[in-house]
Length: 128
Image (cartoon, rainbow, N blue to C red; front, side, top):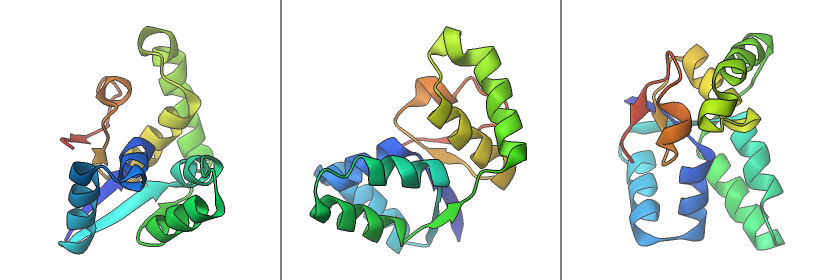
């Protein structure tokens, strides 16, 4: 089984239902991939739900993945990422925490936001 941490942007594209993103995420989750996401992705998806139906769809997707917590180790690494890359690549707190979570979990990241993840030491990216 392959393990992948899905970034928020991949989950949002799935929830907005463009056929290519929806198919690829569904195919992954049903085809021997164990999906993971950061607790940050959970918060971002639920915060972005505009209606009760959107909240149900986001929760349904999240229930198909293992949600990883972010603790003090992830916070320290996210802080290091931010101090080094916030200005040069526009790295924000959410992406820094998601990247740090992936590093500590030893998981590759599926993201369409390569610009914010590629320069970060220890982060392994998958093509989406």
